[in-house]
Length: 283
Image (cartoon, rainbow, N blue to C red; front, side, top):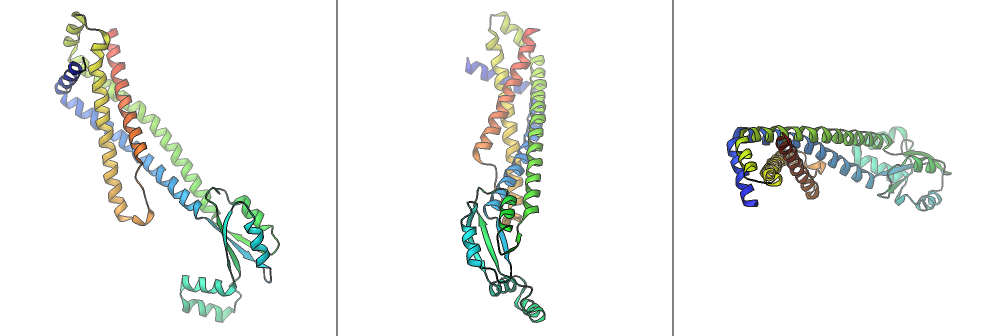
């Protein structure tokens, strides 16, 4: 039965080569767009995870404050992974390394040590995603002048991630309907072109399942090929972009997501084939 269904599927594809090619092309474009958004969403999530895992808070100390007491208090906070204390001299060296020794020396000669202050660099634990509450808690400590961290960066990244996730979901729904309609119309065209063959099969007593199977397989195969091509195009484009901006540490979609996309595409194609041939049989 499977062998016969496979031969019938091949015959259907041969009958409508142009239609099959158009279906595969359309499905590949749809899955390419969807995979592209998934890739953006995936890398944005990775970027946020990296940012959060390396997120740091700079605790600026008041003049003559006891850095040892503040250090102990910071270490006792459950959100804190580690701390590093910088004296005024350390702060100057830090600044000098960043802007150059000549400029740093010029500023120190003009202002003395006033532009430089003692601070404690606080590294946060990886699970720490919202530093706002922690910053307020640290700011309330005795001897703390100011708390600096990438508040706006975290908020902006969170907003962008939310927007991308919603966009990916919306595009996923749209593409699902789009691919299903494409497969439906494609299989309908095939059924129309082979209606005499279907009539003969039913005339000799072929079951509905026997008649449906070739179209079920055709829908699954064309969608699978379209999905594979779409992902392949996205991968090639990703590799070209990655070569030019390696410093961003971009990653392609993990194998489980790629497999899920292909299974999803194949399932949609099979579903489209089932619906189309059921309509034809019911007529």
